[in-house]
Length: 158
Ligand SMILES: [Cu+2]
Image (spheres, rainbow, N blue to C red):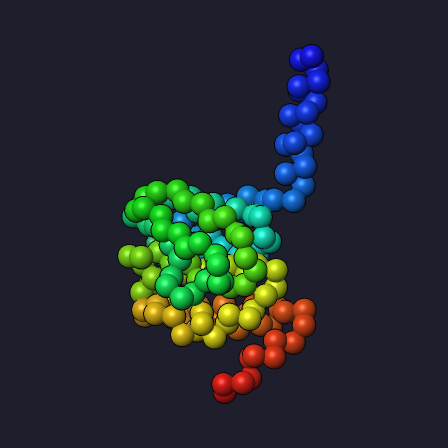
């Protein structure tokens, strides 16, 4: 009996593990390149079902989504200061992530799910102050440049 239970548990565990990934992003005062107040990864690629875990490696940071800068039907998230927070990805598209006290200094990240760039204009229109805005623009640009298929929305408003 014990063996049956054990193997069932292993099966369930591995079937989830095969599809969903946990992606860990650190909140840092300084990265290896010497950049200050940054997420350890700024262009974060994920798939539906993945969990992105923001870890407070250094103090005085948080991670949260931005109003109107995430896919439709995707639940927003807001981590506490110095708190770990998980963002469970349920929709494809782009999500802007900021550290509230340091977004003005450029502490932002862009989550790209399923290579879906269809909400790029909303991301670019979102309210992000200071250097955060410029970095989000650069990250959207980077995501567009790496997109496997041409993003037809890219040139519509230029
Ligand atoms: Cu910060």
